[in-house]
Image (cartoon, rainbow, N blue to C red):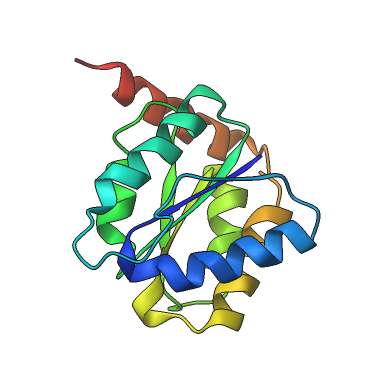
Length: 150
């Protein structure tokens, strides 16, 4: 399952990504925004996608916002969620964050990405497996211990 969520800043790009995912055969659940509203607030939508991933950490989410930063902050508040931000700085980031961090949420900075770049990032994120290397597994376990602290 691929979960999607955004506010107004990523609305148009989310719709394009959703179309791509469906054509590629992915099962998609869209947590909104479902209409363009320049006054909406990203935590309302992002929290729903992050909660879904938190309950099923093997699922994936693509979340979007103006920069993707605030959206990742919201998502990373949830247990078992490892959100990484991408806004076009280096093409390999979506794959590396999967290989090294077993990231399950990709936060896209919609104001910094062209449609084709965003779709390529989504493809790379979804197609790249976690490496399962001991050092990366060890680090993820340390992240989980931090999540468990009150």
